[in-house]
Image (tube, rainbow, N blue to C red):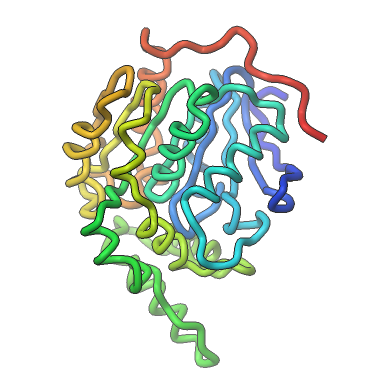
Length: 282
């Protein structure tokens, strides 16, 4: 396969899940934020494909993957990610999630801990009772009612604009495309986060953890201390803060993210099984 970027669909109980794949070696699964797709990792994938088989999926309910009715949950997203690995014959993987994807990665490390060799939480939310109270109804930053005049397009753009570094047009074009994908409610993933009882789950994570912070991301940077304190059973917990990182951390600071990911996955506390793949499920 080499380092060519390839696309595919995997059959699961949800329907077909779409993914991008690049590189060879131990598997690194990438999980995007709401309401993005694999495209959030377009810049990061080639930087890691020389050492890893990098899989970036459209989580169930997003992008070109099978859609989910509301109410959606982090648990369902995690099950979809595990079923993708099953369908592709991947027995063990490191899992990196960004924002909503980080909550999904954490849930995977709890429910399928034997297959998650390392957990990388990028700009991870902390979804406790206070978070649920503040976010459950509103749906977060991406709430815009579709209408015939098209003003929802400008609403989506303006809601995100303060959190993206200039120049923004290219980044927000990509965001808008994902937010308008067929069957996607751009706010539902935020509601799924608000439904998730992370405080009841995080203490069961046993994998080595890297907490990646984006210096200028107001939503996630305050969460690093509490996440670190609550990861009581993790084999190890490291932190890395990317200077000038924003909500668009993975697009704008891909080189810095790749560096901290590479260093962490090469560290002594990460044990990669000798055999990483089994026959795909048909």
